[in-house]
Amino acid sequence: MRVARRTNATGEGNTVKAVYSEQHRAHDPQFFLVRGVVTRTTEQPERADRLLAGLSAGAHRLIAPTVFGQGPRARVHSAEYLNFLEEAWDAWAALGDSGPEMIANIHPVRHAATYPAHIVGRLGWHTADTACPIGPGTWAGACVASDVAVTAAQLVLDGERAAYALCRPPGHHAYRDMAGGFCFLNNTAIAAEHMRLAHERVAILDVDVHHGNGTQGIFYRRPDILTVSIHADPVGFYPFVWGYAHERGEGAGLGANLNIPLPPGTGDEGYMAAMVRAKRIVDAFAPTALVVALGLDASEHDPLAGLAVTTDGFRRIGAAIAEFGLPTVLVQEGGYLSDHLGGNLAAVLGGFERAC
Image (cartoon, rainbow, N blue to C red; front, side):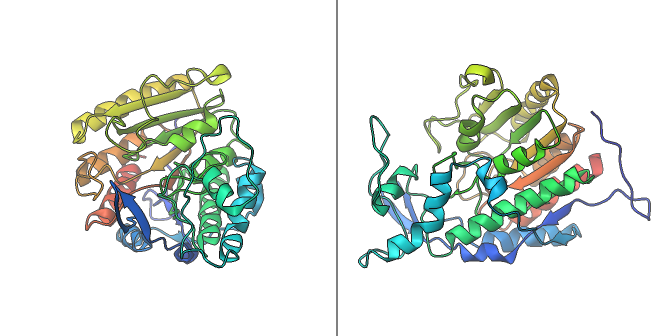
């Protein structure tokens, strides 16, 4: 379905509206473990400031999120997981001898396991790794991020050609009942489920440098939501154990998952070739809406250094997304502290707008 170009009173194409809340600052994690070295996490509140600068450069209208409550989150995440996230900090603080952030010291693989009652056990059960420390404001920040994503989706359901959700913390590594990789609530999945209220088939395109393993896991057996991820080869890159080309879905969802792992250092041309392949798969699926997990960490300047996409390459990515011709929700995922972060966001949205 090709969406007609809509114009404003001046005859120019509308800029993409952006949903944002300052309440993301409630989540300010510190701990990050990299190859045995403890350092400060790269998922810092300053990321949002740099992304806002990119929105300002494009004159995007900022919209505050609507509070949707647990409903959209509960369509994606389990009740016990949502209860854990809501109660976690108070239970942790009540231990009396706990640290300033919640870091699990066990990660059960759930072989013949019993769901634990103790907060330390629940923390291990519900976290895939140590890259998702929980602090006093994490639940509030994660809830706001999900509301930002749902508000952007609702704007598109209400008739916008596209909308951008500046979500922080990000979400695509979060499973139905497990946090991981800086992510707690899967904003991309929540937005896709919200779009399903009006669309029988929805496609998710993940352009983050890391594989969207949580999103894949949530929809792996679903035939109604296609998940496509273009990412750095997980052989030597997070998440290491998911994101391979042979992962195609299971049961009714077999064939509704596509992973396109790219060699380290892949630049613009290699990335655009992957976009062509992704579009071919999406077109064959014939969805009527698209959700983009918009990671900007494929940048040549990103501190996590997986791929090497230039700012012009991001402009081309934005234009390629527009060519899908679908109502589109762009949900912010990764993209870390570099002087190019805001410019790369402006490039994606500018490329998208010009191609519409």
